[in-house]
Image (cartoon, rainbow over all chains, first blue to last red; front, side):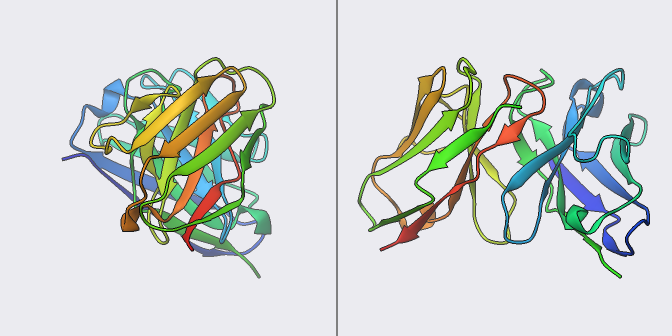
Amino acid sequence: EVQLEESGGGLVQPGGSLRLSCAVSGFTFSSYALSWVRQAPGKGLEWVSTMSATSSTTYYADSVKGRFTISRDNSKNTLYLQMNSLRAEDTAVYYCAKPHRTTVTTPWDYWGQGTLVTVSS
Amino acid sequence: EIVLTQSPATLSLSPGERATLSCRASQSISSHLAWYQQKPGQAPRLLIYDASNRATGIPARFSGSGSGTDFTLTISSLEPEDFAVYYCQQRSNWPLTFGGGTKVEIK
């Protein structure tokens, strides 16, 4: 059974940092690009970042470029999102997501339950 | 950035009725469009990929069509569990983008 489980969310002050983790199981982690998608309270979905299966390529939304860093540890089956210089507008539920095929832009058929990040003083 | 515009924002229908949701792209995205369903407090669920292909386990009452800039998600006969928010998403160009969503509510 495919499972993705995010952790690391919480309350942080503006300008602070947080690292999210996504532990996965049930599929060959090293074969799939993985992504982070967020959803602000009461709002729609926003793609945040994607990392290729081999970690060779990363993609970021303009809204987080230069502040967030995606990484993965294929030996631990874990995806990360390092978030620095956090702003109020980064407040959201952050989901990690797996695509239904190995192509990097393939839509996501498995999602974690999400972890809430709240940026507030 | 490719902008996806979904309409209507809200669709009020009764169980058993047909739902037709629209997604328009600001430029051609070929057939690189997906549809997701999201219920309150839950993660999104992939319904349709590449405009017209149902994802694994998705009932046949869900169908997608379109190419280029205009796409449609049709639910042929609404079941009680289908009342939710639906998002389209393109994978043609970076950044990957979502539409603003259509809420299908019970009339």
